[in-house]
Image (cartoon, rainbow, N blue to C red; front, side):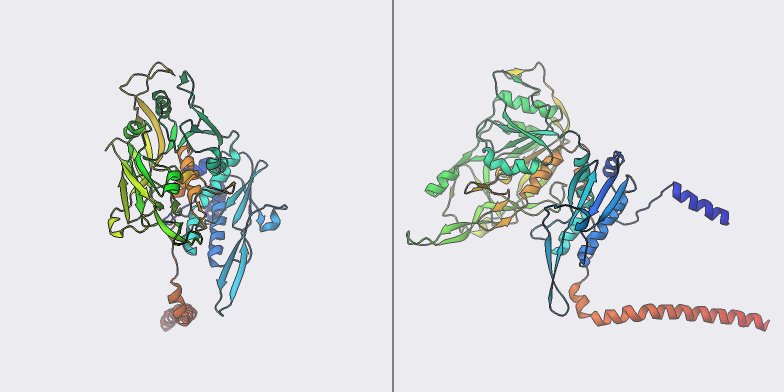
Length: 536
């Protein structure tokens, strides 16, 4: 018997067998994470800055972080360097967060925490942000979303540390797109992951392979039409497995005319790509969406021009968009700021293309068709006319697309001899407005994407932009880790407070009573057993 036990103990040191019996596979890493960890050929050091006198929620986050690091150690040489700021030895420049809590005696307690971990691999270091702080979610919901994203956060950092060559993406120009000042924050966000080139598909002859070196191509708010040659180059890039993000509006309008005259006509914006997108399974409609859930803009309500009185008024042409939990791009993401957006329809039926809605309006929307007009006097529209719900504004597409030039001649000016009619499996994202990816300027300073200077609110546009491009270029499947879900099991605080004494009494007496009952039962059984033997 002892020999069998010794053999079993010896085998446990040689073969590690793990069973995760939780419903949500909370203690298991995905295959993409395991593969990434097994590719490491040097130790990974992790310093956990989240330490100190933490409340119950942050203790749960710390414990989940430690469990994630422990699970990583099964597949790679992961060493925990230490805890707290003292382990860094230098100035890290990370902003702490301050937690204000009300204690039972009514006093307010204040705690400063650093929800970060530092990962070091082969002399390079990356910061892992442990806490998501999404506007509109409760503290418990934010903590739960943070725990769900721990695996992705660590694997994203490791992926960046392992990269020996930065992948390239391109932002196309030459069609009246916004200048670099208004796409500055977009490039700032994406420069963490990619090398970014900007340029136009120009020249007397265009090489059809000129986009092949890019992991993704971004087309952001063009205002003039693409030529047949340009469209052919983009189409064949997609056929060879290239990924494209289209942020295009369906209507033409002038914000300058709107500001100066108080109104502007809206007409269809002809970019020459309608048939292309339709072939790929999507249509950007020539219309504008209005929504009751919208941003405010300052309006002068004074009748005296010499004494202006600016008051915030709802601007229904600036909808606050909802994000979908059904996509890794937008899972657990906050709302998105937008202005002048066009609705999107999925077309093509059963074409083998997987389509997912990423962004949509609220339950009270309406659509202004073209030709039409946008008027600043339209500040108090009839709410009863907002009868549409969840109008799609952004959609992701994944599959093997059919070429828009499958039955057409090769355009003039293209250095090419044949047409790829059926493409490799790839991905596209289509957004019905370029405003979601643009930043505003204030007194020469760049404002972040998604920042509303009138209300002072920061929306999740930056996260959306980063996640969308990461999903487009994600050959390793890392972005799919964001789909991991952990069930939120919260106490009923009110019930726990109201029945505090009852719960304390039961928690104290019940275990003792159970032990006494077990002990008494054992005593009675033993007494009867031995009394019976003595009588014999």
